[in-house]
Length: 244
Image: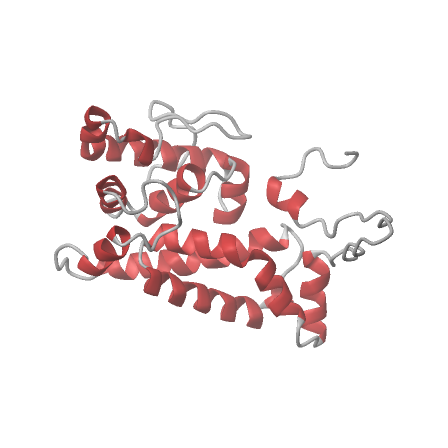
């Protein structure tokens, strides 16, 4: 499609509505083109009472997935998503169009999650978060074949030992499958920094998750080499300037 090259997946997604053709006799006409994200945000800033709700509903599932995967606790994720959307609602007039609207929304959600992770990390350790493990064991996470398994619990517990910035990078790239370019835009860092955080995070996880390879459960762990639009990332590749 002309003009589509060079855009990240999120930018291409938010370009707007779909093209509709003529409906055949007896068929219900297809809905008209949907307004682009940027138009909805502009309408919200101009006072349209429904525009922001429409924008949020369009991206809700992916935003919720990011929050839940990052925090591994439905209650924490719901609170973080709510805080993020209140912030986006109030700060909409600060959006300058330097990135896709959906990238801007994801960045606000990720920052809300990182704030919670950092606050939790600053508190004295109180042992295993039983509520988090119970939620995972009952399959309340994003539906996937390992969501209710011991492997998922092991992976999530290991992720919690990483610095928040590495957790966020691995969640976006390895667990949710975002291209490195999109993850970099969401996190507000370079692609090299995302690669570095992923590589360092995987290297730290390997000793904790080595038993999954022996038991055949390695598929549920963040994989050692992520294939993305920006190329492969492996634990042997620093990939950038970030040293965290």
